[in-house]
Image 1 (tube, rainbow, N blue to C red):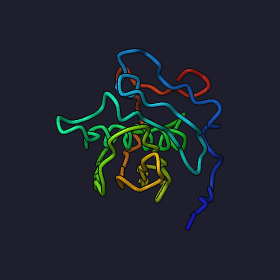
Image 2 (cartoon, rainbow, N blue to C red):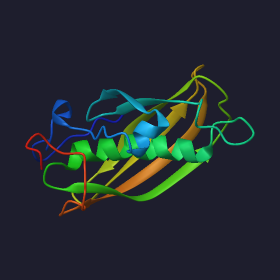
Image 3 (tube, helix red, strand yellow):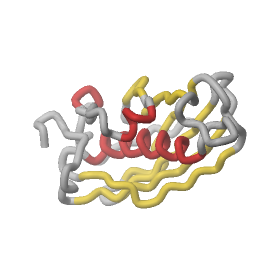
Length: 157
C-alpha cells in the first residue's frame, strides 16, 4: 500500500535540483552505491554485493545499513532542504535473508515527514526481488547546516 504525502507548504526542493556529493572518499561511492531514481515519494538505489561481503561471503549487514541510510537521508534531504538539513538520528535494520551475488536494490519511502523530523522505511531486495533487509531511518532536520555538510540545494546552500 502506497501513501502519498500532502503538503501544507510548498515542497522545498525539486528532486532534479538536488546536488549529491560525488567525491571519491564519500562512503556511498566507496560502497558502489548508485542512484536509480529520486522523487518525493521514493528514492531508489543499487549496491553491488561484490566488495561488500563479510568473511563468510554474504553481503555484510553494515553494507545494508550504509545503503539504507544513504537512500533514507537523501529522501529526507528532498523534503527538508533548502531551509533545514537532515542528519541521521536512528537507524534500525532487520536482515531477513542473505544476498551472495549481483546487486541489491533499496527503495526508501516516507512514513512521516514533519518540520523537525522525518522517518522512512527502506526495503532492500536481492537480484531475484526477494526482501533481504527492512530498515527504518529517522532523521532530525537541523536549522543549521552541519560543518562540511552536503547535499546542497539548487542555490548551493
